[in-house]
Image (tube, rainbow, N blue to C red):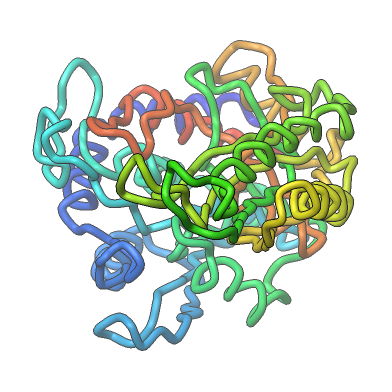
Length: 412
């Protein structure tokens, strides 16, 4: 890598502070909520970003819009912006998402969530960290190349997608379904949507996710005559305790993850009866399982079915399991893959700390690429305020992320 070129690029990026604040403010002023969250989708935000990109300019541009009759325009926008490098042997991709989550309880916000406020080097507002930071950092990394008239070593592609917050059916999954030919195994794919405050963790793997809904049917009766009914709540309580045995049944550890084990936790419980002196005839509870890739989801499903069978025999109830979410983790991105090595080199030079390779328990859209056989990583610098009230993005984090991306763009 030409260090003099990178020095120019990094200086240029540091001087974009006013641009960063303006773009962050204008992005947050355009709520891009999915229909599931009561919104009209991402079209208005997409138009703003496309207008911004047209001024860089780009060498190629493609829209891959997903039909969705729930939104006014009838589609969810996805688009790809590319600039040519010295070689087209591979492309370095940065993928960000345009949709946000609702602000939640406004009483918990100290500012208007849709009006960015700068304070102590932070930009407060819904979406500023998740995922406007990724959008803006990738754009200014390319802007710096253009402003300095520096050609990257390889083609650079920025992907902007919809629907990340609600499953990616209309986002990257749709793009990969319709245009999988765009991506090649030799490409480097970075998703700036998971990270840590130091900017050193490179996420290469995920746990499988299994959400379990358990419906237990007994017989309702008066609280003073339990012999005339079948207590569904008691059966559910015993099943919840029994489920804890999954920790012993599937005990393997993997130090790549934190925690390094599979987790099997009871979470939500629906209301059964409204009064104390009625024995409920129905009880509904939920579990969130995060499973190491060592195990197949089918193994866990088979085991909980035996638990259900035992509860039915012991209490005379009917037990029904269903799965609101069932995600089988794809193979991890190899630790020695080019994208991992390129990021490690950039982090050492920009952050001046040693990178750390990790797996995570939550799902990210990098998994969509891995499922398609494409090595991808999640990386960015964030304080993890996403989805929280008073979400913020540190301006320095965004600048450092852009510098890391630019470093990768200039590597041979």
